[in-house]
Image 1 (cartoon, rainbow, N blue to C red):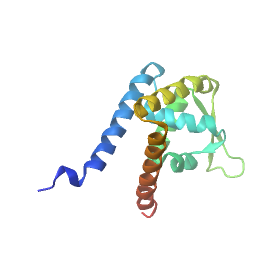
Image 2 (image 1 turned 90 degrees about the horizontal axis):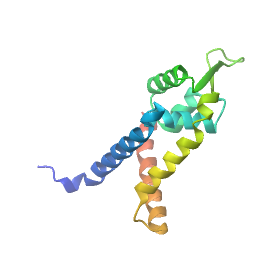
Image 3 (image 1 turned 180 degrees about the horizontal axis):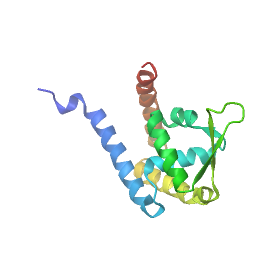
Length: 147
């Protein structure tokens, strides 16, 4: 029989991820955005002229998932796509005016989410939590990037 203690950390991380996604989705309902759509929009806001491939690498999503999100953001008129003059296969992404108008709201939701996540931790605990999460993510991304 498998004991909970054998996979408790992974289970907790999945639950934290689900809870963060749920919280962010609720906060973004009025914006007609999902948590992952906001992540892609934020990446485009931070990096105007970014490509879908670069977003895929930054956010660690599949190419088909990124393509679907970009399509939905374009339909919502939050981003615009421009074909690269040098390489017609490459699409360059820019925030549209309506997307730029959401930047402060998205930032506020991100800050609020982080505050709830870290509530009750002192500065040292917060830094250690972030360090350990990053280390764990790097470990898992090594596996993902080798496939």
